[in-house]
Length: 299
Image (cartoon, rainbow, N blue to C red; front, side, top):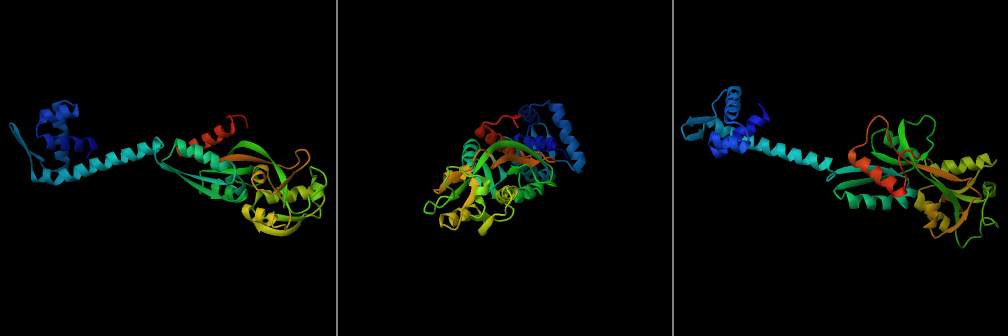
C-alpha cells in the first residue's frame, strides 16, 4: 500500500467522480484508475461500486476511508513538524558553560539567538570546564564553552577559539589591598589567604599551576565553592580570589590586575568531532561567533 494510492482513494471517495478526482489530483484519469485498481488488488477487496455517473463506496471502502484520512493527516502533521525543525521554528539546543561565562557572555548571546529563533528551547548546563568536556563527549550537550588547551587524554572535540581573557585578583573593598602596587605578580600571592573554587573548575587548575610554577603552594582559607559562593566569601573578607576580568567588573569587589599577561585563559566553543551538531546548535554557534566578531579560520 502506497501513500499516493491512499491519497487518490480519499480524493475519489470525496468527489465520487473519476474525471473530477483526476483533475483535483492533477493526474491523468487512466493513471488514477490504475492506482485504485492496484490498491484494491493489494487489499483483496473492491473499494467502489462503479456505475455510469454513480460511484459509491463499498463496505470495504467505508471501512478504509477514516483510516486513510487519519494516515494522510498524520503524514501532513509529520511533514509540518520536520519542516518547523528544519526552518528553526522548533527544536532544542543544549549549551554548557562555566558559571563565569553564564554571568557575563552567555546572557547576551542567548538574547540575540532567542530574538532570531524564538521557537527554539534553550537548555543551559552550568559547570566547570572539565565537567562540561565529559558531558559533551557523552552526548549530554550539543555545544560547550570550555577552557583550552584540553587536558591530556581529553575526548576528541572540535574547538574554535573565541577569546582570551585576563584573570585578575578580587578582594573585599573593606580589606587592605593585596599589594601596595597597582598590579600584582604571581609571587605576591604567596602567603595571602585565598578563596578557591571546587575541584573540576578550570580557574582552580590555572591558579594553582601558576602558583606552583612561581615556587609556592597557595594558602586556602575556604575552598570548594562555585563562582557566586567564591565571590560571596571574598566579599565577606575571608580571602582573595583569582577570577576572570568580565566577572570581576560586575562583582563590586576591589579588582587588582596582574602585571603583563601572565594570568590569562582561552575560551573556545566545542562540539564532538564524530557527531555533527543539529542545525539549531550550529546556528547558536554562528550567533556566538558573530557576537564576538570571530570569523571562521581566525582560530
